[in-house]
Each structure stands twice: as structure tokens, then as C-alpha cells.
Length: 137
Image 1: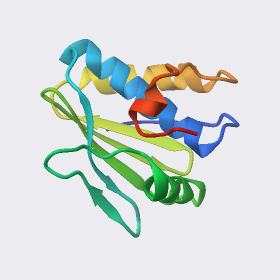
Image 2 (image 1 turned 90 degrees about the vertical axis):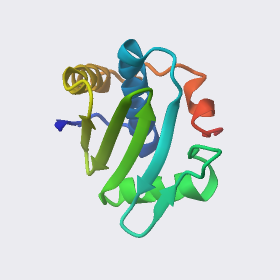
Image 3 (image 1 turned 180 degrees about the vertical axis):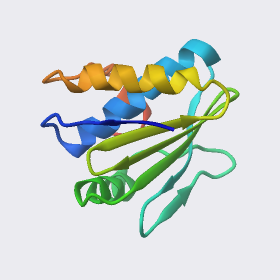
Image 4 (image 1 turned 45 degrees about the horizontal axis):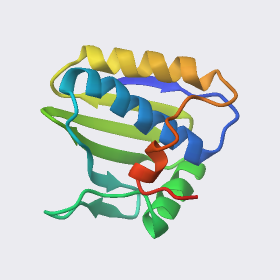
């Protein structure tokens, strides 16, 4: 597992989306066009699990709960599948961590990119990505 501290002055939603976006983008280089599927999200009080026909989306109460936990410096974990790669992301306080099962070098690539993007006032995120994750506001 590799980690980076995000010291930038940005809100929790932007930190979350930046981490998910660059994880998706870097993993897609090795896994191709396989879908980015959030299988499970764990917060201190709640566990969200995808059903058999649909992956989790970051909308409504789920997004609100995740962001509240991030703002309150509580651990939030994402279990993601992209092709043959299983990815675990955790966010606590200002620390973003990633662990991969298939391609360990991918962890270094993701962390290095997030570290570079976090230094920018407005980190790069594809404008379509939040909607694909279920975030509409």
C-alpha cells in the first residue's frame, strides 16, 4: 500500500474525485477499457455493497455520508474492480492510500500523479468523470 498526504486547500469532494479519477486513469493504462466498478465502500458506521446488477454510485445519502466521514477525519475505504485489477483506496484525514493486487507499480504511478495534481489550485479531472461516478452537483 502506498500513501500520499494531500495538504492542498481543497474540499473533501474534490479530494475524493481527484483520487478516484487518477486511480481510474492510471489503472486503465494496464487494464484497458474495462469498467471502473466500485464494489464496496466502508465508513465507520456504514458499509455499502454493490448489488449483482449495479456498481455503487456516489450519489445522495451515500455521497453525503462519505464526505461527512472524510471531513470528520474518519477512515473511508473503497474497494474497486477494474478488469483483472482489484484496488483498495482509503482516505483518512489528509492521507490518500492505494493498494493494488495485480500490478504493484500502479500504486507508485497513482500516488505520484495525485501528489503532482494536489499541488495545483484546480487539479485536473475529466468533466464527465463526476457524473459517471453519480455526482451531479
